[in-house]
Structures are given as structure tokens and as C-alpha cells.
Amino acid sequence: MAEWLTLSDKTSEHKVLTHLSPKRVLKVTWPGFYGQIPVYEDGKLLRVNACPSDYLERQALQIEVFAGDLTLEGVNISDKPSMVINEPAGQPSFVVSQEFVEAADVRDPNPSTQQIASFMAEHGFEAIPGSYFGWLRRKDGVAVVDAKCDNFILSPEGVVPIDLQMMRVPESAMPSTEGSSLILP
Image (cartoon, rainbow, N blue to C red):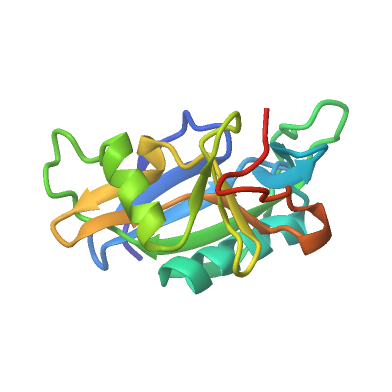
């Protein structure tokens, strides 16, 4: 088996590894922590900690919405301390993989904010002011947060999302659309 090389162990959600044959990236969630997901609460798009089923739904949505190449490789029970305060060691971690996306410019691999905005608009999303890099696609209620530059790669083919926090928002929780824009603080 090929040796995996650590790309990053500094993110808040995953340890990220890669190897060159085949060119894949392996992401392992920190023990007991599954990132965050968007929720609408009191007319605002916020982020809350995800539970394991939220994390899996988030990965499935990235595949559905952006034709992402994500594979659930398995679940690992870690002997390391949990990332969640007061949780004992022995918490599960998800292991997912995805194709390694070659950057158009390895010295500057991420798209600009404007390139991300164009990409999201092309996919039917509207920006949510006052949120944490948030977007909403009303036609199917898909909300995205954390859509900042380091969660995308600018490949020779264009912008590619690699790690977005996504969730479907129930229609009853979506904000009003009086006029042409969202009503948010």
C-alpha cells in the first residue's frame, strides 16, 4: 500500500493526507468532531456543530450539488482525546477520500472571492449577508457556509469546491423574500 503524506493537520475539522498513485486526498475528521453545518435561526444563517449523520448528509450534498468525487472510506475509532470538551477518548472519526484537484497555479491554488461568487451564482446560489461566507439556493433549500477561498481550488477547468459545509434548510425556516433580496440583518 502506498504511503500517505500529510498535507495538513492544522484545520479545525480534518487531518488531510495524500498520495500520488492514485492521486487522492484522504480526510479524517478529528475524533468526536464532524465539522459544522448551516442552520437558519431567527432569520439568520448560522453554523452549528454537526453530528455524524449531518456530516454524511453534507458530503452527499456536495456530490449531488457540485458533482463532487467523495467516497466514504470508513469509520475509525481513535485512541486520541476527543475534540469535544468532556468527551472521552475512543470517539469515532470519519474517513473520506476525494480526487486530488490539480491547481492551475500551485503557488496560488485558490480562487478569488469574485471567482467563488460567480461560481456559486452559476449554480443558483445567492449570497447571504451577515453570515459566515454563506449562500442559499432557494429552489431546493440548500444552504452553504464556510464558502471561503481555502475551501475551493482553482483548477485549469475552473473553480472546484473541496470542503463546504452544506445542509438542506426546511422551507418553513427560510427567510422572507419580500422584494428582490433576503431580509437579513
